[in-house]
Image (cartoon, rainbow, N blue to C red):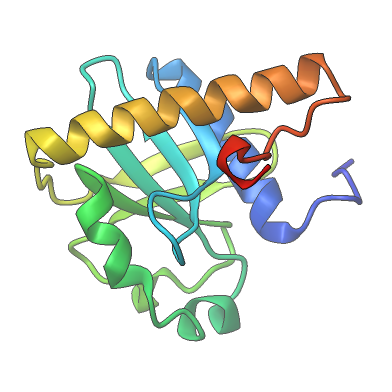
Length: 153
C-alpha cells in the first residue's frame, strides 16, 4: 500500500532513491542548486558524478514543465523518472529514462554524459553536503528547522 501523504512525484522519487542506493549513489530530494530551481532527485555517485532526475507523474505534469532544460547544466547526466503507464515516447531520446514506483526503479536508458566544470562540481558537492547535514540535524533535533538559513536570522 502506498503512503497516502505523498504526492505521485514523491512516490516516484522514493523508488528512484532506493534503486540508486543499489548503484552506490546517495541522493537528496527537492535539491535547490540555485534560486528558482528545484531538482526532484539529485544523486551523487561513488566517483563524484552528479545525476539530475526529474519525476513526472503524468503527461500533463511533463507538458507543463517548460524549465526542464535549465536543469541540464547542474548534473553529469539527466534522467526522467516515470511510472510504467507513462507515455515514454514524449520524452527526449537524448535524456535518461527510469521507470519507477514507490518501492524500486529500473534504469532503461542512460542520459548523455556532459561533465560538469570542476568549479561547479566543487560548489555543488559543498552544497549537497551542507544540505544533507542540515536535513539530518533537523531530523535528529526536531526543534531545529532542517531548512533554516542562518544568514536570515
